[in-house]
Amino acid sequence: MKPLLSLDRVSVSRDGRNVLDKLSLSLAAGERLALIGDNGVGKTTLLRTIVGLEPASGEITAFGINCRNESDFRKIRAKAAYLFQDPDDQLFCPTVIDDVAFGPLNLGLSRQEAMELSNGLLHDLGLGHLAGRITHHLSGGKSGWFRSPPFWPCSRKYCFSMSRQMRWMKSIWNGCSPFSPRKRSP
Image 1 (cartoon, rainbow, N blue to C red):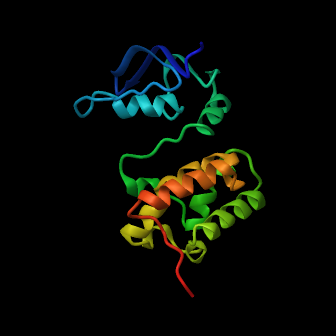
Image 2: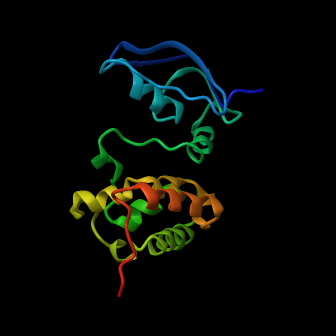
């Protein structure tokens, strides 16, 4: 069976220093991997490299795609999300609706499609009233909603259709999150 993720002799250099030096690893579907190490040893760089956010040498294959250029990595990012270490870096568009639509727009949806899907998601989660709010003016709790699981798949087209996967994800999120938005009674 082919691995879900494979890195072969992957290297990343920054400021003349090797952050990753000929790293090889393989991960099969269902396996779990913990990245443990001191600050500055390359854990974040490795994750950023896997989704194409860091230039690297070597071979990266994920979901059966040999990643050689930006269009290959876009296919990977449609299936695997990268969450920033600093939650405040996760929201970077001017308004909530622009931030939610960022993923679909970068997957090639038209602006109209991305906005319709994003508005639908916000409405279904009871957050439509926040669509026009400036992201950096949200409270810590409200901004937490947009850095949380219902919005991670915003880069994945299949979740926008409110398919079974999205309903399943919402039910889990609503059951276990202290940030879970609750529908308010009129």
